[in-house]
Amino acid sequence: MTKRGTLPDVIDRLEPKERRGLIVVITGNGKGKTTSALGMAVRACGHGLRVCIIQFMKGDLYAGEWDGIKLLDCAIELHATGKGFCGIQGNPYPWAEHRANAQDAIDLVHEKMNSGGFDLLILDEINNAVQLRLVDLEQLLAILRAKPPLMHLILTGRDAHPEVVELADTVSEVNEIKHAYRKDIEPQPGIDY
Amino acid sequence: MTKRGTLPDVIDRLEPKERRGLIVVITGNGKGKTTSALGMAVRACGHGLRVCIIQFMKGDLYAGEWDGIKLLDCAIELHATGKGFCGIQGNPYPWAEHRANAQDAIDLVHEKMNSGGFDLLILDEINNAVQLRLVDLEQLLAILRAKPPLMHLILTGRDAHPEVVELADTVSEVNEIKHAYRKDIEPQPGIDY
View 1 (tube, each protein chain N blue to C red):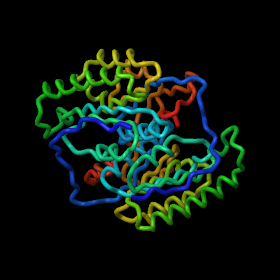
View 2 (cartoon, each protein chain N blue to C red):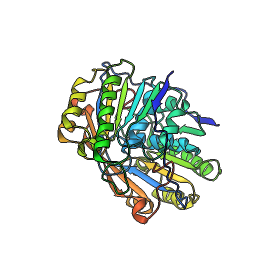
View 3 (cartoon, each protein chain N blue to C red):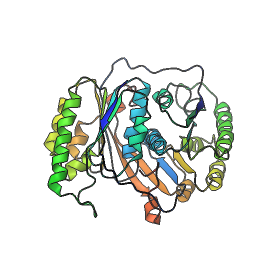
């Protein structure tokens, strides 16, 4: 275990006159959406915010962030509710089972959102879940409209619906310029999963 | 302090036949580049990798990740070497001072890269440093060529140079679709810094 580094002694701090709970959407077909949400979780923990991450598609394959989040000594919880990407070759679960899982996750979202226990709620790959009709668009829009004013909400996953983009404050589209797998390089732990 | 959540009991794990050290570039003008690198750091820590983050532009304004990284109980170090974005209105430091800082950071990169102590090296906003001529393109290309084969290297910042993209394995471009500041919403702690 090491914990070193160099930081400046004198630091100016921004402090907004008005705290606002933002809706942030990270979409697109490139690498970096879930990791961007994880990075905002680290940043939020640094500010003492309480974070809840609900992963809609992950759950069938080990992801390094599951153990990484455990190493983060702050108020954070992580729920991996999915069974992988339905429709992807090799995924053994029927659509109805993916849908049932995602519907349970939606109940969990409302529970966590209304608990008063969190300042940042991350719904990882929920855009995919809507695209795959595991979650109804209206269910996601209802979450956005019901968000407590000071709670931040981050939505990730490709194919964000235009109505979701419309309701969001900040939206980034992560586009693939190139990816190692196209050179037949296998997914590497710590980078790709 | 809470540490809760729900994870599946039975987990399949990917394991590449061949370990490769990847060069990943996260560029573009949208929000989510530095946070994506931070998220890969969390993921890497989950896999037990040793991580070093060197921030080229940050150092004049507090960033939540500085304290967030301290909360990550793994082999990670963070160096914020910069004095902010030169040429940005209000930044008081002359270009020569930014350049001298960035040149010291390049020495630090070679020291960390050759130390054998790290599996993942993150050069945050180094693309900006090259664009601003605080770092010479040839200096960055030399780093990419000298990278140990099993070490992962992540470069962030807008305006990644085409020669850097050419040498990279995975490149994502994060494009701004919309941003809260355009609605005159101030930067919010935990999300924007």
